[in-house]
Image 1 (cartoon, rainbow, N blue to C red):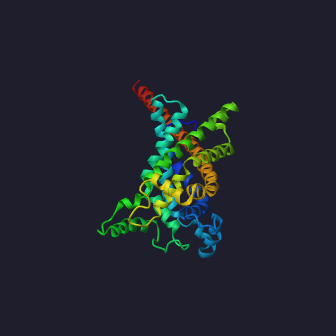
Image 2: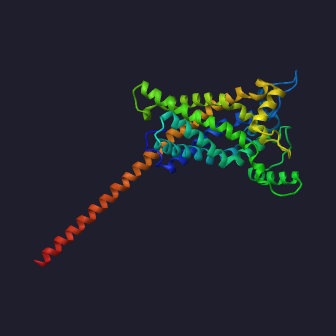
Image 3: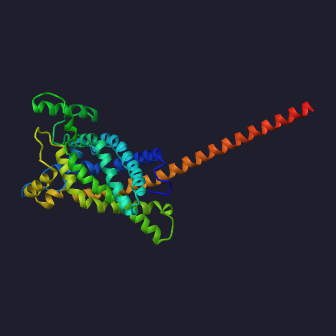
Length: 340
């Protein structure tokens, strides 16, 4: 995603990815809270009040302004490793794909898919906990968890008590993982693939280097890539949230595809499967735009900074070496004169 040599700067990829994730996640946290509450609620019967806008005054009146960022601490704690792993994996997978001689678009899409799956599998419990925390209060559930760490401990024990053996069930922290992976793979692949293709196309159209693209162009490319990707995989996001926030011993659905069929049958295609899509547009456009473009710029800045620091160290070492050689030469000349 830049002019630097790829696969050679893991520290920069990790830092840039984590930084981009923190900024973007905090920015869209209020939208995400409303979206989760709307997604996990079923479509009301005829005549019932519909729409996600009803949650905004409801949250404000019952919990206050800061409640719009409820669960954001867990989200940020999750997003740092998630984004860092995503972008690091993406850069490293690209090196592997290129070694096999794949075409650019295949490299970007394939690397994006694998990177998304890798990050999801490694950070999924934090995502589940964030959804549970966002669901708390507001009349949806009484408060059960004090914070993210409290939820990480309580959820497995709750599942154990529900099964009757009282044992900790770590698998409870991975409820909905399959739906998430199935949705994340194409989403991440399309997102990265479209972003890179748009940047490459615009740089070729304007006959400039990709590194010369302005921040506004990068933000625009990120927004469009996220918008295109989310249309394809949104139903799996609805399924994921419902499975994550279900508290019962038995799973809410047998499989992600059973979930999709059930939701369509009971609630309809638009009001069920694509419930909250408009709100997701409002969230996705700024979110992807911020973290894709910010990662790009932060990564390139960090790599240039590291390169400059390495160059200064190299010059300093060479200078010290020249000074040492000059001193040794002077000493040899002095000793030669003393002998003569």
